[in-house]
Image 1 (tube, helix red, strand yellow):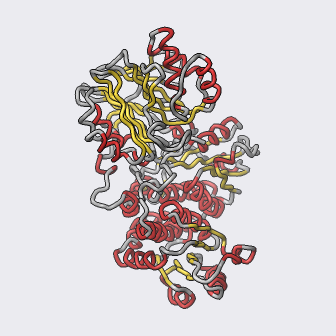
Image 2 (spheres, helix red, strand yellow; image 1 turned 90 degrees about the vertical axis):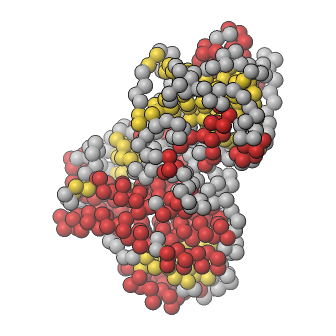
Image 3 (tube, one colour; image 1 turned 90 degrees about the horizontal axis):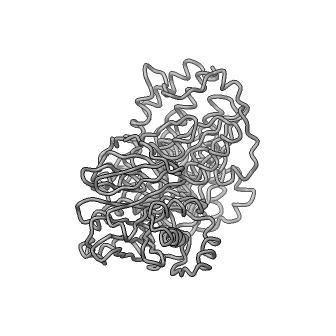
Length: 613
């Protein structure tokens, strides 16, 4: 969940590193640091807090001279945020500097072993163990590359590492296991980074490192090695999106920009996959014969992607009539799942690097299930590991709280459900045609929800309700699944305690928490259950709740009679309604957070890509 960047070239390294880190702050922002190899050897500057603290401390890198360096933004796992625990870490000898994304699982044993060899530690981090382990082997043999390989053979856990050696001023060594790392090819300069935005300003040609691989490079030369130490050739990939896609573009926050990007992201995800009125998912082999033999479909994910999975259960079961279960990835492999070749396991992840989800994917493959991944990041670990992959094509999502990634993941679920339902003949020709046509119109419906009139109305409700201490989201059927994501958004960016419940469960306990002034966000877009939802609204109103209702325009008046506030969304086919219902909840969370003075793009204690368990 940390951000890594490395540079070797002719320019001063420190400003390049700081610029790259500014594009990676979403990966971690409790501290930052850089190490530059200059005339005086390894120079390190690091500081607790946001990257700007380090930028100010180094005068934007101008007081650190040198053309080779590594940098890091941290999300703490070992040791509280502090200057000492910030990366880069130096070995006790001062010869080795390391930046690290991941977690070293045998850190305690290695630390004890090194201390027994007389090595001293200065921080609480697991990363310092890496620096000292490489330093220990380098002191024995004076072989930088060999020392890294020997150290890696003893390390257990996940890592993406950038490593410098004081005695080799022009060289960076980087290795990867279960944490993302890319190499960027430049003209007379080369780069490493955790994610594309860090180096997109400088190059659009990259190579994605696979697990166990190592890259050794300077300004002009690069060599890749596999996990056995054998030289390999890496395929060069071209990044097609522009730098502007990873910048705010006039918006106050990435989250708001990405909310407004949802119509385009939906269109980019859906339009190329519908041809002549048919869903076409190229490279995806799910034949009718295979689907008929399925006993069960599992949807496995974490966080917001898990809530996509909860919605997908309704969608797939309705379209395909195959039993479907949504499972949290962090629980999946520890639950001894009953899985074999008669199961399809669908993995959902924005980054494609989520540690728990990747582990669940590997377990599903080990048990013999066919696996299909829905991811956004091309070349990610999950995309490479799954049997088949569907990319969402959402473009870069920088805000920690997901918006457009959720929307496009759900769109892929729609496409997948329609294709499988059509193959199985569990959806009629007419219904299939109607749904395909409606899916193509969905981006326009989302644009309608994002009208200035709606935005202003939601801003008003946010200013009215931001002072509440508790909020409850209630809904029925697919609305109850949307509630989960809406509630999470409020927690993530506004730090407001919020819970989501199926409305029918209120009387089984949660209603005891409703008191005068409690905020209840009630979703009422499932037409057959509208009257039941209004009954639930009356129940909480009778106990003093303030009810903000999200409903369909055609049911506005009746909902208004029962609620303190009303937000309306257009009516679309029931399968696609969640894509519209969710948008006001994203906007509401955003403006509540602003009213509460929260840093929307960098919510406390959270990072964008969770690459540790």
